[in-house]
Length: 172
Image 1 (cartoon, helix red, strand yellow):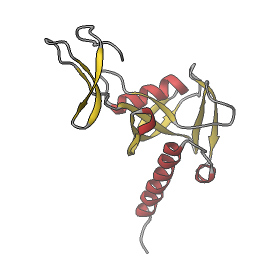
Image 2 (image 1 turned 45 degrees about the vertical axis):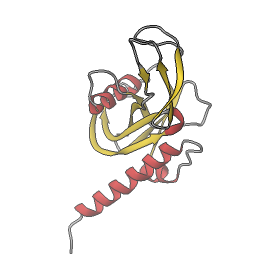
Image 3 (image 1 turned 60 degrees about the vertical axis):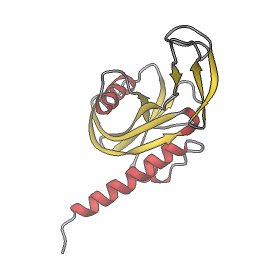
């Protein structure tokens, strides 16, 4: 960002609270670009007995992750994750639980991850090149390479759902 979105003056670097920020030095403006993290939603999608992993159209072959997308204006995180599942997979999704909140510092994003149970016929949107269906067992052993946040979300979901399943078993 080079110019102020309020008055169009050039932005300059200035330390505010010990952090370098882009600020407008125009006398009647004072705009500060705080560069806050962008909210993103992630869906770990269950379709029948399987989990859907997707490859973004810009990614190399063999690289799969969860369904993700930006939280848009005037929508809740639940609405955003349902919209992304519909847009990218053509499926109707119901949020089955909140997995967690994750910071992806390298992209300045906050990721809100949710488990989603989806129904319908799989139809890929323009952002997805291909999908694979994996069992829970395959998911538990799948390497995600440098997709550390994906691996963490998957691990957390597996731990949560194993704990939840065990808690529902009758005690003898």
